[in-house]
Image 1 (cartoon, rainbow, N blue to C red):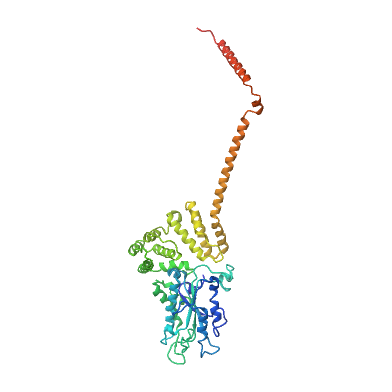
Image 2: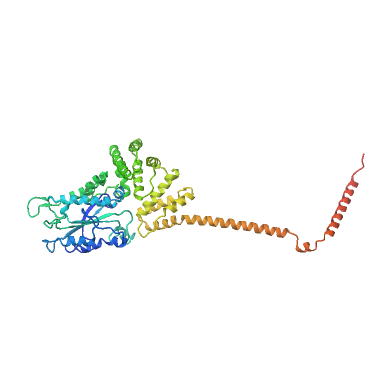
Length: 486
């Protein structure tokens, strides 16, 4: 079992070596240029730097602000610090991967960053900039690269939105040196006063997210638990992969906690529906059904599915309540026992989920094509089985199997259309063959050309008379054979 990766299960902030440069003791221009890599790919649709004052800051402004505010810093001392804020995929789905929310959350983090120095600072005193990125790429030391399952530089599958930040060593007015990597914590004596508690700051990063977005975090997802498990090199057997963590967190809750989690989730969804002037969920009815179902997780999964549809941009049913309850009712039934609407729902969810996890260079699943194919086959479930197999192969990182299955599901519609065409062609050939046989029979049974040419009506009439005379003679002979009449 793999070691727990804390950043997979919580918003995880880390200070690290600046990418694109050898150190943070010189200009920050190399690091800033490194963060422009996605802009070069997206061209006009680029993402600007931001901070608490401005949402559209260009790279030159960032470099100038950091590089010109270094008075009093020695040559071999750090001039700036860099890091990243990372999210779990479920957290990103929970907030609809909304960049505006992510930026607002970043501002809250740097408000807390200022307070953490214990020097009566506010966010206005911090010289910081951040940038949202939506892609990640495999590095040479990644496990999948070492196993030959991916190549260095390949884009990672899934939702990978994260934040890179840079913060100056000096305060905005240049009066104070601020180091988030100092070993001093809450000191009141000596040369360094205040310090910075990184462990507490990481806890704050988590609690800010939960409070801001009303996210009900399970115990096994909390920084406190994961940090202790990491220090002791323990591995909680339930947290193997992210897809399992949802089930574990919900199942580990007691009934009161489950009800609260569902209640907050419904409130979160209704807030969005209210903003969009759409009909809302009946909280009482859904919670009552969950209670009658002994909080077995079906309602929770149904709400997660609804949230997923919102994030994916899919059409949301007008009667959301019936949709949630119906999905909950049939959730654990096999595919062949589901109503058509939920068969389509399952296929759509699987296809979206797989497409998010596929590497960038792989051809995505054509959902409309699959749904059309299933419709033609009366929702037999063949395509669903292949989607299930693709999902299993992705979990095992068996990319060869994934490619093979993608080709198979991509060619299903063409394959059946080809069979249909071949069948039609065969029927046409059989019809032509039957017509040819009938024509030949007619020709073979028809009178010959010689017979037609030599036909003489008078001769035929004489033959007819002769035949009549012959018949009369035969009748007379039969009468002569009869015995005497009495």
